[in-house]
Image (cartoon, rainbow, N blue to C red; front, side, top):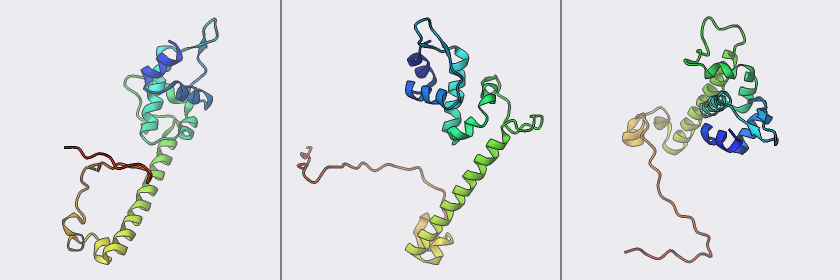
Length: 163
């Protein structure tokens, strides 16, 4: 299939597909007689794995470090990254590094949240005291409910009122 079809089948754009190829995540595909890229189902399956891993928090650089093993994740069922029988250097290092980075970010955000709560509501709020925060302190997070916001430039006339 051509690049547009392969990209659509994998849930990405042709531009992203070319980027993955340039960065070494995807081997160069075969070419038609006219020089167009020709993708096979195995390459589309690999693209889907790449998209899934990027969506899970991995970076392109993370995936580059184990690009020679990405095809293994297209197996059904895919091997576990931390499997005890996995050969040394089989990618669990990438997972471990990414988990450490995520843990560090969670710690940073927790400290930031505690500092903000302390500044806004005093020491009791930073410690999760419900009395300082009302019923929300220490509670499980509620689903985010976006608030509709309209942005207008100062020169734009106000929007007409709707009945």
